[in-house]
Length: 154
Image (tube, rainbow, N blue to C red; front, side, top):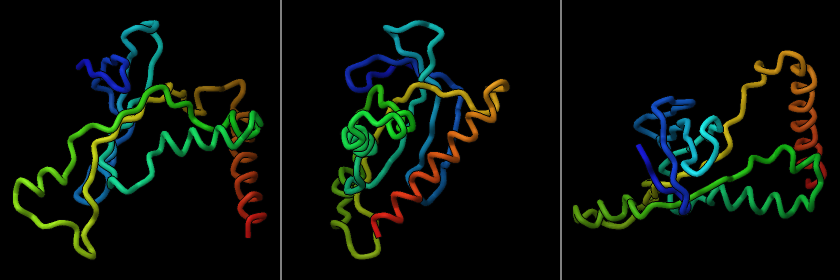
C-alpha cells in the first residue's frame, strides 16, 4: 500500500513491528515502510495511532527536545529522528457530529485524530553482537541521565 505522509510517498509493508490494538487506548500500530524516493534496502518505521486531539504531537515534542539540546550529543544521539509526520483529517469528532452525539462530557475522552509518524527503522540491541555491551551501557547511561535531570528539577 502506497501512502503519502508529510508530502513523502511510502510503501507500507505488512510486517507489523509493534501493536497495542485494544478497546481502550490509542490503537497504536507500527509497521515497516519503504521511502519511494530512497534506496530500496533502507527501512523506516511508520507509527500509526489515534491519540486524543489535545495530546501533544510527539513529532513536535521531539523537535523541541532536539532544539533544547543545543547540539549536546549526549542528548541528540538518544532522540529519535522524525523523517515524516502528518495528522490526517479523519477525526472521531466528525463521527460524533454525524451521529448527533453531543460534545465531550466529563469522563469521556476528547476526540481522536489519525496521526502517523515515520522514523528510520532501528535494529534491536541484540543485533549488535560485537557492540552489545557498549549499546546496553549507552541505554543505561541515557536513563541515568534522565533520572539525574529529573532530580535536579525538583
